[in-house]
Length: 289
Image (cartoon, rainbow, N blue to C red; front, side, top):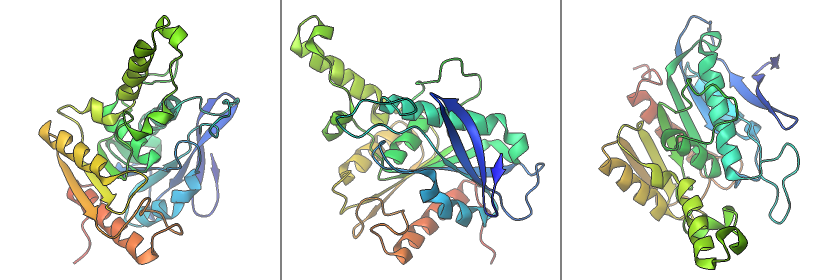
C-alpha cells in the first residue's frame, strides 16, 4: 500500500503484467473500527481512455463528508483498429471483470478499510456509468479463480450518462462475428453478435431486487442520447426497483467531470444532487442544521 498526503494507492489485482490500483481517500478521524459507508467511483473514457486520478477530487469531496472513497483503475481497450497487447483489455467484458474484482477486494478488506461491506455505493460516468450499472445488474464476467462467494454487486448506484444498451449505436464496441464462426451463415453471425450485445447491456439484465439507483442525464448529450436513461429508468422501476431520474436541460455529456466541458459551479450542483441521493439512503450523514 503506497500513500501520499491526500490518498492511498492500493493494488487490488495483478493481471497480464498490470498492477491495477484503487485510489483511496479516508475521512478525517477515520479508524478501522468505524464501519463507515464507502463510495466507489468509476471513470469513463469509452473503455479505451481515462484514469482513476480524474475522479480524485470527487473522492476527496465525499471523504470530507465522512465516507471512505475509492477510484478504480481497470484495464482499457486498445484504440480502434489495434489488437490488445498484454495489460490491455481485449473487450468490454474485461473492464467489467476488473470492476467486479475491485468490488470484491473492497468487500473482502472491509474491516481493514473501516467500511460496512453492505453499504458500498458505486458512481460511474459514461463508460464508467456502464460499469457501475453493470455492478447492479450483470452477474457474470468473473476473473478465473476468483472467490465468487464474495458479492461483486453494488448496494446503491449513481448512473451519470451511462451506456446501458449495446444493441444500437454502441454495437460497434461488440466484436463482429465472422460468418465462418456461424457455419457460413451471415444471418446467424449477425444474431450471434446481437446476443453478445444484449449480454453486455444492463438494460437487458434488469430484474426485481436490484439496488436503488440515481439516473442522471443531460438533454444536450449527443454521445449517449437521453432516451437511453429514460428507457432504463422505465424498465428499472417497472421491475419494482427504486430509482430517481434527473434530466438536465442545459447539460451535455460527462457533466460530472471537473475541468472538462461543464462549468465548475454546475458540476458542484450535480455533486450536491448525488449527495442528496446518498444521504437519503444513509450513505452520507445529513448536513448539519
